[in-house]
Image (cartoon, rainbow, N blue to C red; front, side, top):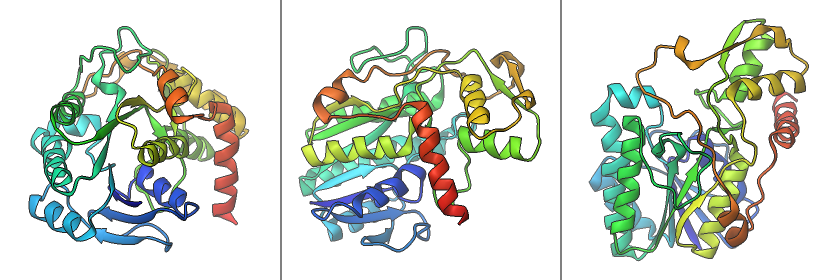
Length: 301
């Protein structure tokens, strides 16, 4: 199987590259905007701006992949609110370009989506729940889902929640590393207690996406962690696991923050479909802490 991944410099893209190293049957092509930020490996890297129709057409025709996993997206929720044109270009128009070329190549397209397509009034959600996004980011991702559902190509939508993990040369910190790094510096942090998520270890999400690719499993799949937690609970568990000072964590509600985009209160995913059809078996949050500590020790050695 020839597998092409867009957005391979991001957290999920990097984990897919790492996972592919152990899968001999996969010929892996990583693409991203700008230079490759991944370590050398048994894969090919090509520069690709998914918002350029010409580049999408040219690069994918040259590679002629069997499966495409679209990890490229604008995911900063507040930035999407203030830069709507750029958000729509990356999250919707780029998907139109990918769909068009995948039709020509008869390639299977896997597209990443989000819990932010929901309003958070009745989570956790299964794959059949009715979407009602509160933010422009959520609207853009729901629109991209609609494009796939309306298209004739064979495809899958992988929805996920609050992805975290350790990776190479990435500038954007996820919640776990932000808490750990802040507390190690002795900084006080404010963490909200009135939102609920099922946070997702990046390796679990990569494994779920790879299972979809290998099975060519069509439809919508929820791929997240199994534990429903508030950010404050995540922060406290992180501090306790790494023996950091929990008194530096101030428990607050979301009303004290001024944010451009509205966040859903309670999302999280029901994973029954992915467990049954993909053998998806995510780590618990506590297990993930053990996993991350081993990675961090390897990085520091």
